[in-house]
Length: 127
Picture 1 (cartoon, helix red, strand yellow):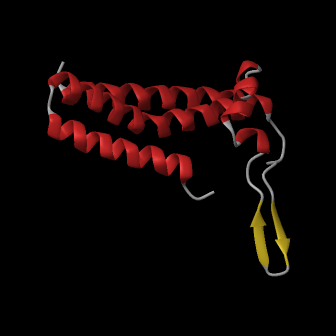
Picture 2 (cartoon, helix red, strand yellow; picture 1 turned 180 degrees about the vertical axis):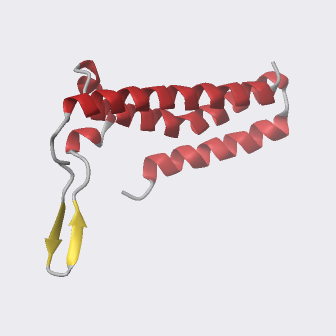
Picture 3 (spheres, helix red, strand yellow; picture 1 turned 120 degrees about the vertical axis):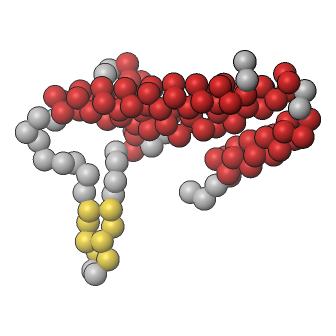
C-alpha cells in the first residue's frame, strides 16, 4: 500500500473516531446534566479573573479511563479529544513504518526526526 493512502486512511479513521466519540459523549453529557448549571467556574481575585476549568479527573488519562467504564459523558468527550490529538502522531508513525518498508532512507530519517520532535514536545512540553 502506498504511503499516501496509509496516511489518508489513518487521518480519516482517526477524525471519524474522534467525532463519533465526541458526539456520543456530548449526547450522554446532555442527558446527565439536563437542567443543571455549568460547573466550570471563573473566580475573581481583585481585578484578575482565574478560570478554574475542567474537573481534575478529566486532566489525566489514568483518571479518565475508570470514568469511561461508568459512561461519564465528559470523560467520553475528553477521550474524543485525546483521539483527535493522537491522530496526527499515529499518522507520522504509520508513515515512518511505511517508509521503512519501502526502504526510503531519506524519508525514514526525516520522519523519524519529526516523530522524535513531536514526542519530545508531548513529553517535556510546558505545563
